[in-house]
Amino acid sequence: MEWIEQLNLAVRYIEEHLAGELDLDEAAKVACCSSYHFQRMFSYLAGVPLSEYVRRRRMSLAAVDLCRGEETVLDIALRYGYASPTAFNRAFQGVHGIAPSLAKKGGVSLKSYPPVSFKITVKGVEEMNYRIEERGPIRILGISAPLHREIQQNFTVVPQMWERAAADGTIPRLAGLMDTPPMGLLGVSACGDGEEWRYFIAVSSSQPAPEGLEEYTIPAFTWAVFPGGGTGRSIQELEQRIVTEWLPTSGYEYADGPDVEVYLNPDPQNTQYEVWIPVVKKESSRD
Image 1: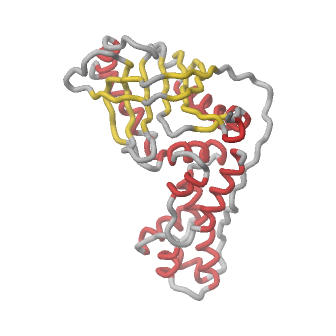
Image 2: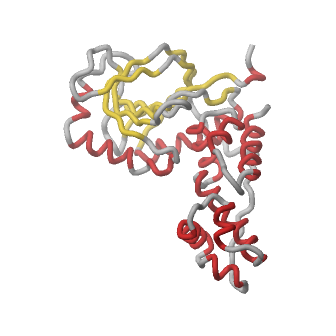
Image 3: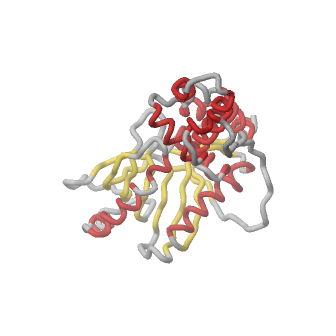
């Protein structure tokens, strides 16, 4: 089954479960990838975070139900996963700009967000450099923080971690421990299914873990490695291109493993880096 077809099947699953309990981890299984990678792919392809897409779709359907005038606001709130009228009211106003009670009365302007559908579109001719590497386990030393299961909520967690690590001397301390490849400062999103999601600022090292630092082992994987350079924003643009341009036609798909960013120099305005994503060959491409 093609990669895009898997995503569209996951969207169909979401549509079928907008009313009632929606398990986004199950949607990721339908897409044949981890929950973390599913959310990343969805966000890059749809241009909106998965959780926001679900909220918009639910509020679109809720508006239709309210306009019928046959049910209470609480009944409709419960149908779309909101345990209290207050939470439902906040979500509804966030999408439509008015309270559910006004929508129920009718004669007001409402918004409708249709279901998303993915397809492959050929974009431009800008090259992407990459290499495929086989790597055994990589032992890292560093600091970590827990990540939220809705990945867009982590967009403040990770930058704050880097700011603190730069200010309190953690980064030069880690640099002194680096002695095994990949040789660079690492940002590791360890978000596999079945483990607590955590983000590490770390280095690859064979040395004993000093006090105050954590040890973590990245399992053996096949990696697709993409070099880049520029600012922090440029690495996000590269990651988006990987998902939207390289992955659909590469013959590979995401493996259930960490994403790794390797920072080869410390200049935040003109850094050199590599993005490592764990991959496996697609079923149709395997020997």
